[in-house]
Image 1 (cartoon, one colour):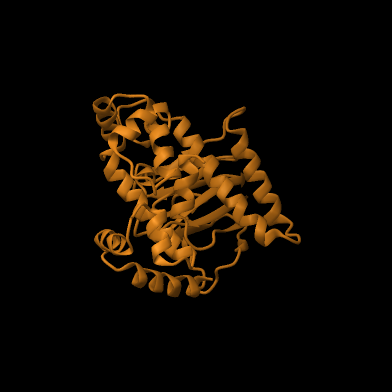
Image 2 (cartoon, rainbow, N blue to C red):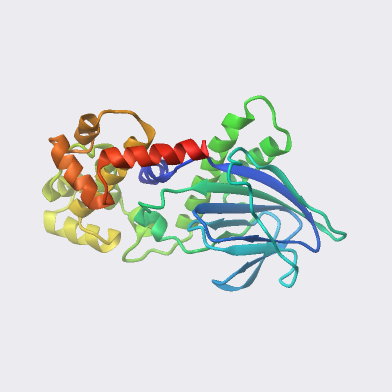
Amino acid sequence: MDVLSDVLTALRTGRPSAARSSSRAPWGVRFHQGLAAGCHVVLSGSCWLLSEHGEPRPLNIGDVLFTPHGDGYALADQPGSPLVDFDPAPDDTGPLDEMRIDGAGPVTELLCAYYMFDPARPHPLLADLPAMIHVPARVGQHQSLRSAVELLGDELADPRPGTGAVVPALIDMLLTYVLRAWLDEQPDGHSGWATALRDPAITTALRQIHRHPDKPWTVEDLAAAAGLSRAAFAKRFTTIIGQPPLGYLTWWRMTTAARLLRETDEPLRTIAARCGYASEYAFGKAFKRAFDTAPGQYRASQGAVLEHVS
């Protein structure tokens, strides 16, 4: 188990989807603000990223763009090209297969993937990410990311038996490699999750919390696992993560509980025990404090949402 995988597993909701697009200039697509994170890879040609977060930015072959927070933006062959809205049908939850925009000019091919995160519990790791992550193509760098792009692109270009199962897994892989690429390029600093995931002591403590949320952890226990004194560990953890160790423990327990309520039919007493609560009553109080609703009501509401999107 590792922290990045835990975060993505806990916060993912719904089913990710992907498509290849082939567009002839002039073309432009507007992606409105929403709940989905978007990932785009330029397979051939070039285009421009248009957003309120900066000046128009050129994207070339092999470049990867990731928009983790669902911000609005547009992609176009040129900054002045007319834009059409990306507006899939509300009940279209399967793989998007292929999109085309016909024109008379040069062709740009894109690989596009969409990923849903739980909007009620954004993990601070994701909150640390900028609105737009641009991973430019560089010879000899991010080979695993390039391999994931190639595999996903091939699967979409030539669907075969099992494609429906393979594509979501490849989207997960693509997202993981994009985040790795971004994290690897961040300078060392005094706070933030890019620093946390490179700090052996803090990573050890996070792994213990993620792996065993049911344990009655104390700051002393976590400090011992991290190999630091209690005071040094508490200060270091709070500075880097942005909240005290036991505050993050409670946050992770509630995040884990929400996932179990969404994805399983386990009894509330079992979920309470798995998340470190001695009684269903204590668990219910903590969950309502975090989500402003009782666990059973949360489960019922999420079941209705998942039924709508499945």
